[in-house]
Image 1 (cartoon, rainbow, N blue to C red):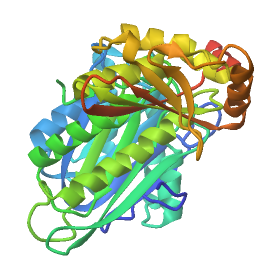
Image 2: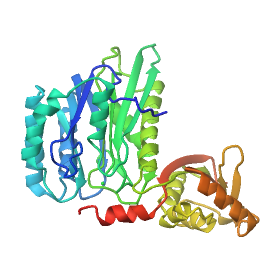
Image 3: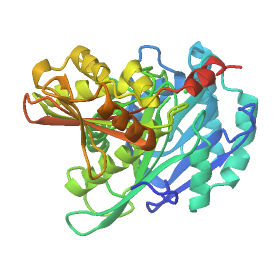
Image 4: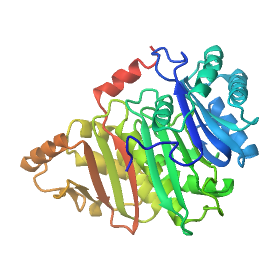
Length: 414
């Protein structure tokens, strides 16, 4: 489970820092860095939005050319550096070069990330002035890692952190740590170039860039790509993983324990992002079982958590199963409407909502009032959808749609 003292510096050989340098008008932290004490293998996945921010373009370039000797990640929060043309690319390059010099790192060894308002360029004077204090704040303590986690946030109400320890097949003990941000503009479509989701993982396990790339792509598909807050895919979505090999020995690319730990950290972060959706009051978890294929199961579960009408019903504690069935019907998954079951997985006492494609008995009168009271009490709404078409399963995470979401986004720039 994710815990408050989980740390991006929990694996051996990492330090982190986060400061406020005046990029955000609020005065909140807005510049962060994670640094490995030695060259690390790295991999990343990025937004598949055709409109890509400058740091997405630069990050992909640097991974392609230097993915076996990356030393860290530099994040600017408050501006997305998207729709900024060649000037935005130049700004990001200048900032990376200056940061590498300040941190005494080799050229081309930092990966970039940005999040915030689309349109403005990075205020280089403030960002460059912040590099000295950022370097001075580097540390391997939980406090330093917490400052880094806080400095990547925008409309988030809390940092997202996760950690797993594991033993590889040969007995070596390793750790995977992670931080993330995401609250609005969340419906990631991340791929290996095949408001924003950012997630950064570190590990002291040894790995290769190709192995990390395969593992990250597979686990992101299962986790972060199954989150939807508002259906909007950002220009800046970025996930990086660094493996510095401090644990020694041969590559853990194909070690099941390592793969499971990376997946578990990403799942913790995915849940945390959905729970902290802009204006959210409830986490919505939808598990689809009995689909004909994994693709069908993912499509069906994403359609339900992404439905505006389902989200509004969850906010209003309205057991409107017709909205769930509607989302399943347009999801693209192969279904038989007469065989769909939907269950509210209340702890210890599951509640049927849809049985053989029909609302459960009494749902429109007395039973419906009971379900409404249950929905009002729960802060996580776990739904299971059984399609009875095959054996594939998938899970997606979302949140309700409240009045606060509109208020936040109506005034996002102002």
